[in-house]
Length: 412
Ligand code: HEM
Image (cartoon, helix red, strand yellow):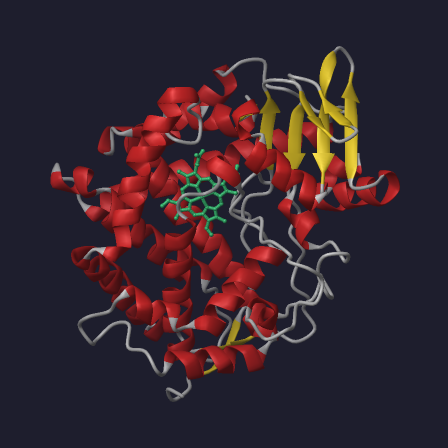
């Protein structure tokens, strides 16, 4: 039951009791291999990727049933083709000049939204963050939909509706799991399809499933990373100050000629985002189904088994990370703070099916955090601890908002 109520805590308990690799046997079905052995995951995801496919789990089910077959849910040559095309869209996204203009436009709106906040009261930064990541994703990826005469606001509303639809599915699933003595499996796609109306409008506005996927990914995941980053900064004023100092050297909005190297210069800001991604990975599980028997040393994994990797568990492993539960962004700077080998950030997955949008996601998030931190100062309300993520949502669990703006500062 603990796994169902608070999956992350449940997985941690399983690992501390049975070790870093656990086979969960299922009556009449192939086991689920749950592993937090970083070397094993790296070997599997990188050297055995040709024997792994995405599982027919809720993730691919939801994606295929509701968004259509895009990159995430395709396999084989269909995946190769989609991934190549998607990669072109993503890699072209920020490096080209007109695209940088799009980013600048969204940053300008974000700055105006932040300036409009009532200072001195309790505010929630998440709605501003979500508006920003959604506006960037629309500007970068829904050119087709906009070109067909659909307004920004219409696409905005459709993506939000689709997003809350997926959240609803996750909620229902967990309610069913916790109400009943054992996990409930959806028998077929019919129940998921019952929620498809949330996606209909989006499908009408952006008929290409890859575009829908890129829109959702760029909206959901960077906003999750930013929500946890801002929450963490509310508890770490020195880090917030350091971001402000860094941002003061770069004008991301008014001076023409913003380019990628300006963002690369915001190294500490990037380290804060990475640390938030380490502590609170937006995607809770990296899942794979084994399509052909795999042997690694003494370990034999049967074809048909499922692999489940929980980045949260890997990132909180004290054998790999110093003080793994603490917020220490410096560990991502090359200044010797990381003393335990070469820890890896698993938040973007790994191998050929790893996230193709990781660089873009970092650029968007770093730029947004620098702009927010340049405009306002915030602290967490005293006595309120930042909630731990539960892992109950397969993707994009966001921080519960609780920031309190205490002053509007002069720019550092
Ligand atoms: C903080 C932001 C993001 C996080 C944490 C994140 C995380 C992930 C993860 C964990 C995966 C699965 C990897 C695996 O199974 O090994 C994934 C896949 C994917 N992500 Fe992201 N992502 C983010 C942003 C983005 C953005 C901005 C885009 C698009 C521009 C994007 C597009 C995709 C696509 C298309 C896939 C499917 C790849 C495939 O199946 O080949 N992601 N992402």
